[in-house]
Image (cartoon, rainbow, N blue to C red):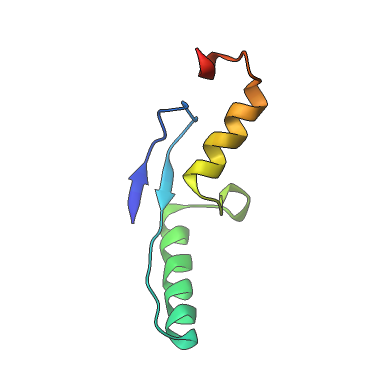
Length: 73
């Protein structure tokens, strides 16, 4: 589990990055349950979850700012 902040481009807030290797469907289910418990402990709500890679977030942010936006200067 990593607590991350994207600075280029500057995305608002912090991201809790969850990484896990899994070797079986049963292992994946158990890890998903544990991660759900951890998210509940951290107070994360379903509508706050982001299920994308950082690169996707950065590209989406840049596209929303337009080619002349501050992210390109």
